[in-house]
Length: 98
Image 1 (spheres, helix red, strand yellow):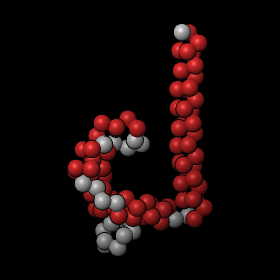
Image 2 (tube, helix red, strand yellow):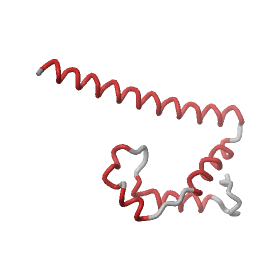
Image 3 (cartoon, rainbow, N blue to C red):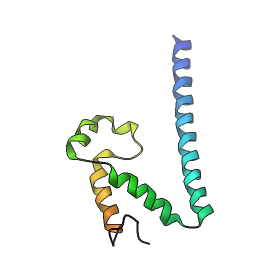
């Protein structure tokens, strides 16, 4: 029984470590590309285009509400976040404005 519990906690810890490393790698990839190009708003605009082109409605958000713990961001706030991003697109050309 003790070996099984220790194995379970080691398994859980290694999975969390892999998820953490993946998140850190993604963060540094975004930061590196923004630093390399010197135009972070272009990267933000590209991510905005991906998010704004995805159809998000209340029904689809309700269907995944119970799985919040597995997402990087809170799906219940997704509609508000998309509307906030659209406000940053002042001239509505698909690019976020500084």
